[in-house]
Image (cartoon, rainbow, N blue to C red):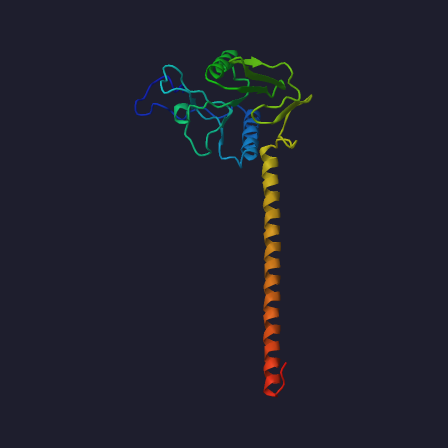
Amino acid sequence: MNPLAHFDPDDPYPESDGEPMAENTEQYEWLVKIKENLEILFAQDPQVFVAGDLFWYPVPDRRIAGPVAPDVMVAIGRPKGRRGCYKQWEEGDIAPQVVFEILSPANSLKEMTDKLAYYDTYGVEEYYVYDPSANTLEIRLRQDGRLRRMSHLNGWISPRLGIRFALSGETLEIFDPQGQPFLTSVELAARLRDEAARAEQERARAEEERARAEQERARAEQEHARAEQLAERLRALGFEP
C-alpha cells in the first residue's frame, strides 16, 4: 500500500505501508546485522538513534515530501527511544546523517534513483548501498552540498560512525572502530549468551567471596568473644590479662 495514495486527516503520518520489512532472507539478515551491531556500538551514547525500516518524514507537509523508510538509518544528536516514525521537525530538524540500503531483486532502478534524490535533497551525509547478490558496495559522501559517489571503497572508514568496510571476493565485511567484525544475529545471540554466562559466573564468584568474608567475620567475632571470656575469667581469679 502506498501511504501517500489516500490522505487520512486522522492519520496524517502513517507508520507503516503494510509491506514486509525485507524482500528476502538475505536482505533481512543484512538489515538486522547492520542495525543491531550499530545499536551495540552506540549503546553507551544516549544521543545516537538507530532504526531499521522506520518512516522518515523530513517536513510536515506530505505534499512536499512523503516518507521514505531507509533499511537502516542513524541520527546522531537524537535521543534513543521508541518512535512510530521519524518526524524531522520534532527531532531538532536533524536529518539522519547515515543511511544504509540493502538491495533485493525487487528494487527497481527508478526506486533507487528516487531514494538517492530524496537523501540528497534532505541532508543525508553518508549513503551506503550494498547488493548482496552481486557483492557490490556503493558509497556516497556529502561534498559541496551533494551526495557524491566515492571511488576508493575497500578499507573505507565512515567519517561519522568510524566503522570500516572491506569487500572480499565473496561478501562485505564491516568492522567496528576497535577492529571487531560485525556479527550476524546468530553470532550476536551466541556472544550475548556467553557474556550472560560469564556475568553469572562472576556473580556466583562474588557471592562465594562475600559468603567467605562473612564466615571470616563471624569467626573473628567468635574469637574475640572467646578472648573476652578468658580475660573475664582471669580477672575473676585476680589476674589482669
